[in-house]
Amino acid sequence: MANKWTKDEEVLALALYCKVPFGKIHAHNPSIKALASMLGRTPASVSMKMCNFARFDPLLQSRGVTGLKNGSRLDAEVWFEFSANLELLEMRSKEVFQKFGIQENHIDEALLLPSGEEVEQVVHSRVNQSFFRQVVLLSYRNTCCITGIAIPELLNASHIKPWKVSDPLTERTNPQNGLCLNALHDRAFDRGLITLDSDYKVILSKRIRDFFISDEIREYFIKYEGKCIQLPYRFLPSKEFLAFHNEYIFEKNL
Image (cartoon, rainbow, N blue to C red):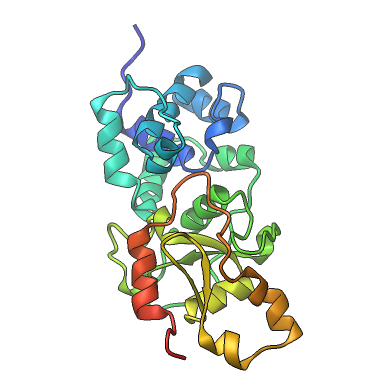
């Protein structure tokens, strides 16, 4: 009989689940094989555990992807404790890696994805933002959800509800509080010059539409107005966070 999964092991499985597209969760995935080797389990066992988490993922459920139904109570406990707080998940996973005496970077190397860097300096350090960035960019397939730009060095994991006013436990590193945007549209979104409606369509402020009409503005903004963003394969943007952005950040009357 196989050994029961511990909470520490499930934390590592969930951390990897957040980084791997659902369609690539299988026993031949190099990152899954790496984690399985570290845990002394088979790749099939690790991939099955990761598939168990899919049954709690609302976006996958809306697409008819149910994952494996015979998961444990511990699966639900780990999902609901960590899925909305990537900072906590990464901190805990790092602790587990250290506890097991294994090298976390081996799994990230297997993923072959950029970790990103924190560029904005704030008074309180944004611990473990690289994990939030990685998960958000992966959810959008490393592509700007407005323009389709797919150069990772030009992409940001943009907060919908700003970091400084987000709840540290449930909002700051909640992947549903993230959009993958190129640097220009990230800045425009952050400054309230653009937003998204409840149908995920782009809305422009009057400041852009009425006062700064030029070929460049038409090319970079006007042509996207009213169009739906490219939705992520996982962690659909929360309409609650979008409502906050519309109400408090977007420049409706300018």
